[in-house]
Image (tube, rainbow over all chains, first blue to last red; front, side, top):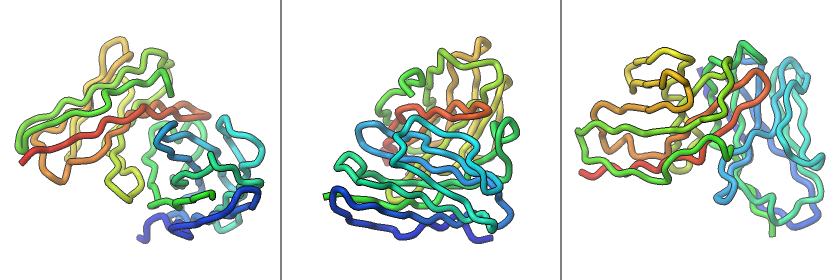
Length: 117
Length: 108
C-alpha cells in the first residue's frame, strides 16, 4: 500500500498570501488529521476530517481551514499568512474517528515545509 | 501540551537498553498513551500504545504507572537506527496532546 502523500514538499510564500496544502491518505483510511510543527511550539493538532466532515479542531485561528473530498483526500488552507505560520505541516491518516481512534495508529506523511517571508 | 512532559534529550550506548520517561499528570481515564518517533525530514512513526497494562511489541515495551500519570518507553537494545525524537502523546476521543519530545542520541 502506498503511504500518506503530501504535496508540495516545500513552499515559500510572502506575508498576506494564502496557501493550500494537499494530503492523500492511505487507501481505505477515512480520517485525515493535520498538525503544525515548529521549533518553539512543537507538534500541535490543527483539525481532523472524517467522511468529509470536520470532527475535531485544535486551538488555531479561523485563518486555518480545511476540507475533505469524497475520496478522503484532504486539503488545508491558510489565509493571510503571517511570519509565525512558517512551520512543517504534517497530515496523518487512520481508519476511524472519535472514540475508536484513541487506540488506532496514525500514519503520517513527510510533511510540507512552509516558509513565510 | 504543557502537561505532557519529557526530558529534552537522552543518550545511550549502542546495544544497551534505553528508558524514555513521560509525565502525563492530567491524563483522563479514557485517554490512551501513544509513543511515536520522528527521524529527520520524516513524519512521526508509530512505536507503541497502551491504556493501563504494560505492552510489548517487536519495537519496544511500554510500562504504564499504576496511577497512569507517567509512562516509560523501553528500547531493549538501542541501535544507531533508533536515534530520533520520541514523542509521548495522550489521545482522547476528540483531541490529542503531544509531549515536547526527547531527542535520543545513540553512541556507537
